[in-house]
Image (cartoon, rainbow, N blue to C red; front, side, top):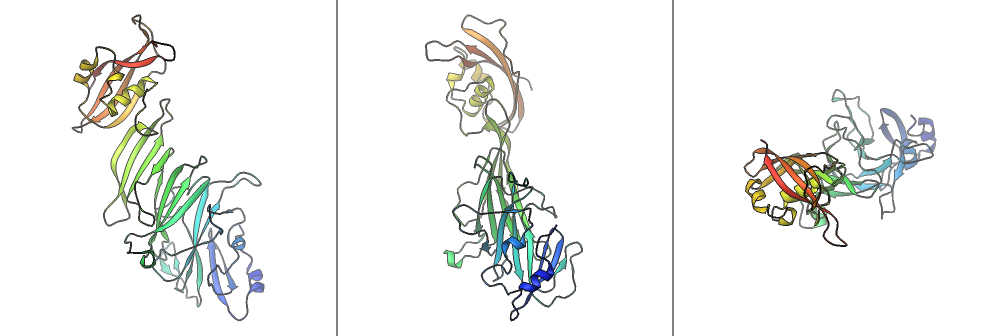
Length: 371
């Protein structure tokens, strides 16, 4: 794949009085180019620097496709470029990726396979480092976003004002086709041989980074994955940064919740009624008449998390009274307040509407502890 002009083309464009050898190695392809020294912009036109199959992406509300950053601890600027890749020819865009070009003054590059210095090169190098997509050690998580993204430099040790702040992480937030935040990628410099490390989070429904001021590092991440359930359920997993590191650990094991947060006022499906009761056990309106005390007596005393919910998709109608339409059973596995995992079987009945403008409602009639 041709990713930069040929060496002969580059030489013809060179400025005779200021000559710098620029080594660009994209996708295992390299070519030494004679170009002007880098100042406030890349020493190569952007369209000559990236593969022809990529489509450069412009971050909304910006007027450039080339972003100056510095998170590697030196005084030299790096250049950040975002792009669509795996695109359909003359058609749809693929996912979003990113790459950083680093104008390094260290003239002893390393072989990435052996971490052994290569032969000395007597000039500066413009070195590309993939963010994502990538497949090096610690990478391979996928892409940065689907339709759009934003980014910011952050600091693990913020100073009193922006002028004194030394940034050491890059936060990239990626949106899906519905412009919902579904990916968060945190990058940091690992040195010349290894490039940028990453902590990457992806949630099919969404991601929440908690309360944080702009420019400060991410300390908590909540990932929501859609379960594609009829009752609009998601799996929620909570992560937190481990003290003094860039590693994140799970602080709350996956739990089933309603995707939109909270509990519905009038849950429609039987399993939604059960989950609402488990998350909000004060909701006596979810219990069949004269069954509140009996249900409370056998319900778990506090729920840490709901592990699973199973049910039959079709309701039955055998053995029902005049005020009931149908019946259904729901089985839940949960971890109670004592940390013990238990399984319950719930029986719910569908009650007829009592007036015009109402609909039938599922109510909990019975529950049994299975194990």
